[in-house]
Image 1 (spheres, protein in one colour):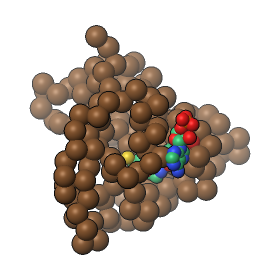
Image 2 (cartoon, protein in one colour):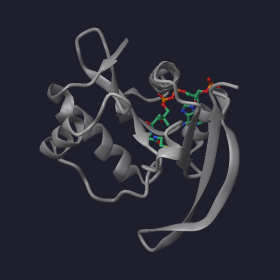
Image 3 (tube, protein in one colour):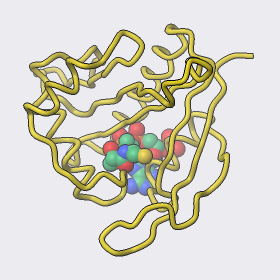
Image 4 (cartoon, helix red, strand yellow):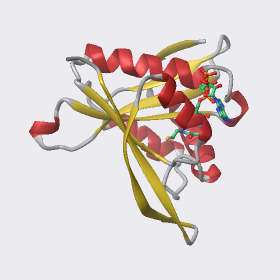
Amino acid sequence: MRITNATRDHAAAIAGIYNEGIEDRLATLETEPRSAEERAEWLAARDARHPVLIALDGDGTVLGWGSLNTFNPRVAYDHVVDFSVYVGRAHRGRGVGNALLGALEERARALGYHKMVLAAFPFNSAGMRLYERHGFRTVGVYHEQGLLDGQWVDTIVMEKLLSG
Ligand SMILES: CC(C)(COP(=O)(O)OP(=O)(O)OC[C@H]1O[C@@H](n2cnc3c(N)ncnc32)[C@H](O)[C@@H]1OP(=O)(O)O)[C@@H](O)C(=O)NCCC(=O)NCCS
């Protein structure tokens, strides 16, 4: 497996993997599926401080993707970055998420961020395990934060300081 920057050519694979995550209802409060065209625009709009990385196997299949996302556009938050990590259903549980999060953290450090943050569902066992293994600590839980398919869901907020 190798991890590299995503390009427009990867938009369809990124959309497919994201849509699996949306359908699973374990990863995100997002409910609208994405198209390759929409993800191509999303990729084109990203700047150098907000890269999208992909994990590829030997034959170029996209196994998963991760991104560093704006946490808050106010200048005082420039040192904080949010992130996403999604692995294709067929490739989960084989270390891809672990490798992507390691690469995101390395990139975040290289870009000078002070902190990584995330919001997740507490019942996302794989995600929780992944984040705890990477040293993220729980800041708190927003109770009944989202209404997903008519059900209230909690979200857990986590952070990791990268320096200091
Ligand atoms: C969460 C996700 C990114 C993890 O990536 P992955 O490649 O499946 O996970 P890895 O194989 O790298 O394993 C990471 C850790 O989670 C554990 N894990 C993997 N799948 C698990 C599961 N279903 N239940 C519990 N723990 C699990 C692994 O054992 C490993 O822990 P360890 O190092 O202590 O052994 C991936 O499952 C995924 O994309 N899920 C759907 C989208 C999503 O939930 N994204 C996160 C949104 S917050």
